[in-house]
Image (tube, rainbow, N blue to C red; front, side, top):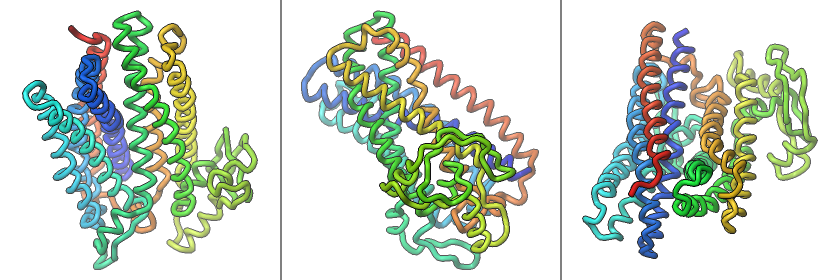
Amino acid sequence: MELILARFQFASTIVFHFFFVPLTLGLSILVASMQTMYVRTNDEHYKKMTKFWGKLFLINFALGVVTGIVQEFQFGMNWSEYSRFVGDIFGVPLAIEALLAFFMESTFLGVWVFGWDKISKKLHLASIWLVAIGSNLSALWILIANSFMQDPTGYVLRNGRAELTSFADILLNGHVWVQFPHVFFAGLATGGFFILGISAYHLARKQQIDFFKRSLRFAAGITAVASIMIFLVGHLQGQWINKHQPMKLAAMEAVWNTENPAPLSLFAIIDQENKKNSIDIKVPHLLSLMVYDSLTGEVRGINDIQKEYEAKYGSGNYIPPVFVTYWSFKTMVGIGTLMILVSLLVWFLARKDGVADKPLLLKLLTLMLFFPYIASSAGWILTEVGRFPWIVQGLMKLDAAVSPNVSAAAILTTIIGFYVIYGVLMAIDVYLLGKFARKGLED
């Protein structure tokens, strides 16, 4: 019970925190780009855009910081065995993130907020770019830490602990360089759809038409490029998973038995107890094409990998929750595909000012403001649940990582407390963003 509650608590607080993160990553770059256009052209329209969207960025950033602070405490409280085992390695990138990237973005955010008309335009512009760079560097260092859990490198086992032997290997971990671009472009798409959705809301109501047309045009092309790049980088990520985490790939597609060529599943009713799919609608060859860039190629099945892992690691269940992994993947891919199609359509129409007179498209764009959040959350659920039963792939299982002396009652109490506090913070964020977004541009 302690393990289940500890996992639920960490998953809940991470999802709450990640509600704020993608918008911070993407909107910081978009606001910096708007201010760059203002400095280059001296066009006051870009200054108004920078201040309006920058205000929404600040609200989201402040609440994101608050929800992120408690994450690291859980490693020592609920996951003390994990911290003891890999703390020398896992703690390094987290420390660098806090001491370098977070302090950088926080410091220069203050310069940007209070520096309007007090410092030179170029110095003020540099401050918002340093905020954007710092925000994304924070994400990079956290992903470096997470990538060690996905594919441990640069370590040696000594006295029952994993000790760091090569910091370069940690930095050059292959998982980092397929995961970070995926998160980066997901953040950019989240920021882009945020601007498109709010702009569409006002255009549908014929409010401040010139300002929100300009905002929509500015974000349309960037959003389309980011959405396409998510798909392309995700393709590379899938190929990496096939090599390093074949069980995760098999669970993503509910492949129970090894197939060559392997079809791509579109819809399946999964029977994990009997290790089969009751219904499975497939596209022939497509999974092999995605994994190998070829119409043929072997994708190992769950049953075969289970036998391989039992021989390698000992008896036990190495099969992740297939239903959760499968549908998290389908949710992410389905929403990602819709994002590509809609963003390309908006970009095409925005070039000729053809979005404002299409009420159905404006309603769809307003609704799609929320879709990147769902896709990002589904992606992280896939990333973490698909690694079950490992907390560090191949090195440490979840049941060995949990704190031995923390009671279920204590964990449950903190879960309730976190839900109350985080729920209030999320409600505040949504309220404030909604309030200022609906108000529109102020005189």
